[in-house]
Amino acid sequence: MALLPSPTSSLCHHRAAPFSPAAASAQARPRRGTLRVTAAGARSSPTAAPIEARPAAVGRRRCECFDLHQQMVPYAEAYAWQKSIVKRRIGFLDSSGDHSDTLIALQHPPVYTLGSDSNEDYLHFNKEDAPFEVHQIDRGGEVTYHGPGQLVMYPILNLRYHKEDVRWYFRSLEEVIIRALKSAFSIKASRVEGLTGVWVGDQKVAALGIHGSRMIVYHGLALNVTTDLTPFQMIDPCGIKDRGVGSIKQILQKESQGRETDDILLMDIAYDCMVKEFAKLFQLDLDTSPDCNFQEIRKLQR
Image (cartoon, rainbow, N blue to C red; front, side, top):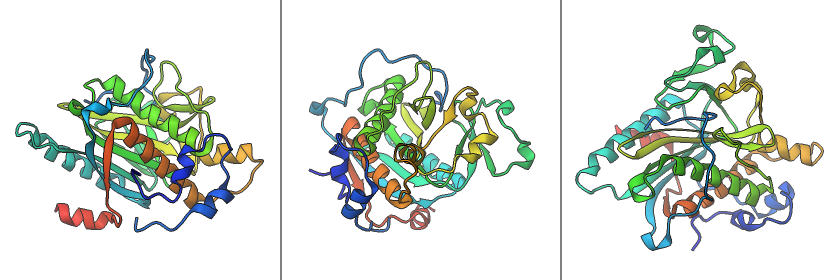
């Protein structure tokens, strides 16, 4: 059973041929509506065993999915939204009422975020005169940038129903990204020993950062799809000075000698395959709203 009525779902299984914007465009159709632990770039220990999906015998858990991947949602509002969901979920724990996980996919207007222990030495500007909004938040790790063209996914999972192991969770999120890049774009991505995130060569294409409370984890991952990478020059992303930042669009253009790409299509394909791999690895049944509108969601939550 397909997890999403995706116009590009076949691309997620096609691994032999390189990504072709023209071929993908022919298949695409318009969409409907559409534990502070560590963070992106933080030092981490290597994985000893391959990442595997939660055993199927456990059964598939429901996951409400808010598809806003083509919408710009202000960071402060998305952060408050996550916190409200986490608060509600924690309230269910003692009554065994926590019956589903949550996945939010969106984009942010330009913003810098700093983990709770961030070092401002990694900022190349005066925080009081910043080029974009700056938010200090409760995830671990250092500074990063979010902006248009970056697919941000916020899973809010109760690890009691998956595996009560935060390192496993980090490695699983990385695995979702690695598999999606390979299946959708034939891009070979990997981990770097001692670092968190996903890399293509020495360029970081995806950052991770989470916080947790009573094994309910939130925040998540940011994948550079068509992102303008210039704002990263104003910081040492994740406190890393000796490696660069890359995007799917940049990698594809380099491999195709500068051929133009359809930015909206790239984002759609990235979202479709990321969600597909996420649901597969975490053994989740996604319940996606076909006409998801952030402003309407916020009204219902007030």
